[in-house]
Image (tube, rainbow, N blue to C red):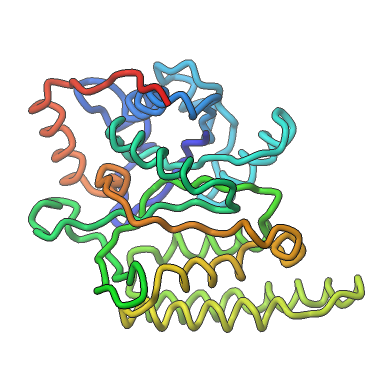
Length: 305
């Protein structure tokens, strides 16, 4: 499990994981406690500058990195590859405070899915937008759960489980960098920005394929799948299965897809607002503090799988 540092639209100054305090305790400390309430998250590592996160009141080891969002993930995964055998890795950001019961419910879905290359839950947005309060400004998307169904408004969660061995990691790092910079901008703007900046990386990868006598299909595959997905997302007409297939074609290695056709990318639509509410503004931090006070800081308990 890797809680990583991130950026926000209206970023709070400093390192949110240690500088933000809820009920007098640092956010990273509370996050680690809540992750430990689910036994699946073991071991838990923090990816961030050790000079900062070693001061936190946690027993989690720190992978020393102070780069961009994608850069932190790269350093963290490389450290994990050396320390642990291959297998799925869960990644989240350090600026959320998930409810343990919601975490457990989401993980139950992960176990039901069986082996997959990527599992990324989409969080069902409330029918009453006012329930989001300070978090209401965050962009949502409309996804059609299945053929014939009405579109559902969803928010991206801040938890992903993936098998790194199946993925085009170098390309994903580039995509993550671009996606994170533009994550709170309209889909049309994101599509234009990401397409123009990533095309040279695609062409480079296709050149490598040529030199190794492999078909240079990456540029065409990624662009066609990516543009089609962005267009359907903007229109709010994309089927969840279409989204899963498009993402799989973009991020999963071709050889892996052919070797393991039964595995795939899973984007379940689930409940769990606390997994979608990352703290980017002072108003959001204040709301979290208010909720903490209202609950008396209760709700932490060990959950068995």
